[in-house]
Length: 338
Image 1 (tube, rainbow, N blue to C red):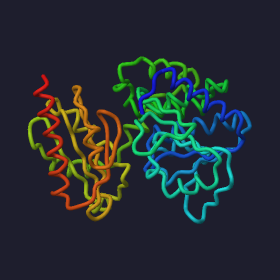
Image 2 (tube, rainbow, N blue to C red; image 1 turned 180 degrees about the vertical axis):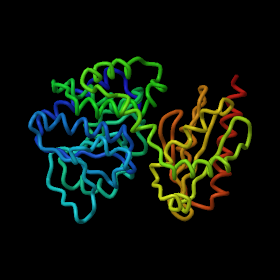
Image 3 (spheres, one colour; image 1 turned 135 degrees about the vertical axis):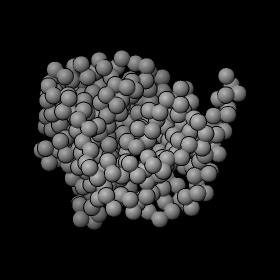
């Protein structure tokens, strides 16, 4: 869903007014949360509590260990149906996704018990239609930037906890300002946040430099099996049994494709993470003005122009060849256009 700046401003103000006029909130983000979704959610949670609102943060699954530094107040709950009761609530605020499937089974309960549902996100809308109170800004480098703007619209003063949460969101999704989408906005916001958060180096370390020896062992095995179907394409895979062997979780391999995309010649990368037998999470990345989100959409997924993904089912060799065919088509089309 592409909106004009005026439409985005209108939706932001509409969501801010909804928040002002509501008292109770349930806050969440997508499955296998990352620092953008979690930081956005926590930043808003702290802001709402600061102005006397009732709010709780429910995750669809367990919080990855590397984000424990953001949960020092132990405010993050894990939804466990049917053992986690959901009370009638004014508003559900969903951050960093607009895909209902990535919030299930919690989303079904939110629809039952929440008067309004608001998606606050920087990803393009997929098959779902936006809710009345959705605030989507696809040109933003992170969802944290949208939360910062909402908090400002609500006239809520920043503090260390809010600043740490939002700074973590922006630092993660921009990879410490490597990817700011041609805008100074991320840097401008973080300059203000750093008036309150005085230890950004620690946040960078938590997010990007907290590897275990087991992870290094796994990386060495994965990189030894990397495929290069052509000079501009890289493909990697992680098996579920390898994660178990090294006592690692799915979040521990989130950055493998980012490593591979740092290879100079590579233009498109595909990473297959086996979640269960014949089921894979596909991650796609590209650079140099090559766009791959259309490939993800072909397989029922979505995402940004140069960072997208999908869930695939089937024999690995078959699904890999299907994805590779579309990657090579994309490269060929780009070359013909040049």
